Length: 348
Image (cartoon, rainbow, N blue to C red):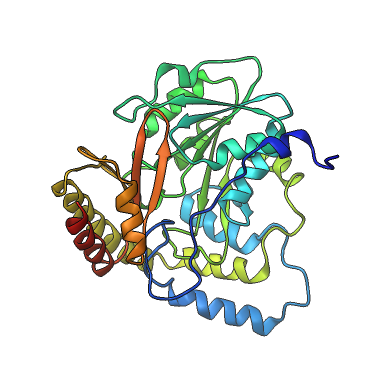
């Protein structure tokens, strides 16, 4: 006899990208930043340690929200901090989607969205992107039991973007909130933060794992109108962000010069990677994230992934029924990219 809810037993569960424990890998599989975070982060963490960890942290991460408010141009009470943006996605799903109700997501996209619906005992509806990575009309169609729509923007695995004007038009048509997951927005030409003030349906989630190089720390946040934030606070864990992560995240977003310099390096390397992969016969959409999505025009890529792994180069092999299989390759340093591309030249 099972002690678990039936939906837990039947679901597959989310599988994170491989995290090797040994050294000597070129790790280009989980979209981490290849550069160390701002030096201000270490200073802030050390100061937090000196103050001590015997007391609970600020449950609302007020210092971070105030700093983010200045950066984003929204009041502090429009911001909710989380233990990574996955925590934010979980809070929003728990608050808005009940058992048997409907969550809509694009396909192919971030596979955690479907897992969050499964955890709720809810239904998920995948609406396929068009071949050019635009959204079909059906993505904005109303439904009586539709409670939440997710949109990764830039999308994973494609790295493509839905323009803000299209996102606003989509929100006007939907009968429910639209969460724009901007995990990679700092690498893109546009973002949707300004749309939050234009529509209460639009919410934007961000993470510090990618652009701010804090994947090992876990910190993310949500931007939404304050009456929505007030309800989400009821759902989150009491102290979902610890004192060290609050201090580090606050210092990280305070160093915009570091972000600008690091972003420039990653965008330059991204262009080199896209060009090199196309020269090898791969089909690569124009990415606005810190990774590229590559399908080969003449052959499958699983054997390429396996051979790279044998040579201690990790990329993400992903299969999407109806779309084929591809390699999602993180933009590493120029040296890491050249190592990966050189191996692929021999394999292809």
